[in-house]
Every structure is written in C-alpha cells, then in structure tokens.
Amino acid sequence: MILSILGWIVFGLIVGFIARALVPGKDNIGIIATIILGVLGSVVGGVLGSLLFSPHQLSYKSPVGWIGSIIVAIILLVVYNKVTGRKRARP
Image (cartoon, rainbow, N blue to C red; front, side):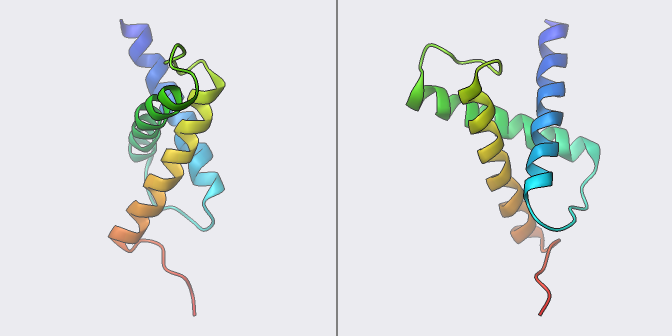
C-alpha cells in the first residue's frame, strides 16, 4: 500500500515536471503543486486514455497512461495559469 502511494507520488512528480517543461515560460509553482498537477493529470489522463484505447491496462505502467497523463497535466497547467494569471504573454 505504501509503495503504491509512493509510486503514484513519484509518477506524479515526473509527469508534473514533464508538463512544466513542455509548457513555454516559467512556472512559479512549487514541488508540492507539481506533484499534485502530475497526480491529477495521471488519474484523469490515465483513466481516460485507458478507457478510450486499452481498457484492460489501467495502470501508470502502460504507455497509454503516460501519454494521457502528460497531455492532461499540460491542459491542467495551462488552465491553472490562465485562471491565476501567473503567466502572461508579453506585448
């Protein structure tokens, strides 16, 4: 149980960092917010990806879970930046 939770935290951290690296500009969020971003992206993206493409592989170990997690984490990060106004395009 503990190893599973730690696995999701590490996976969320990796996915959150990948999402932050792919979204242009500087993100002023800390490591906890990065983990939360990655875990939320993992849960939503992994579930949606597995339901759409491979229903028998609902796991963070599958490539579908990784891709879906990263895509949803990027979307969540962009929405977060728009809502909070943290990132603004320079004129």
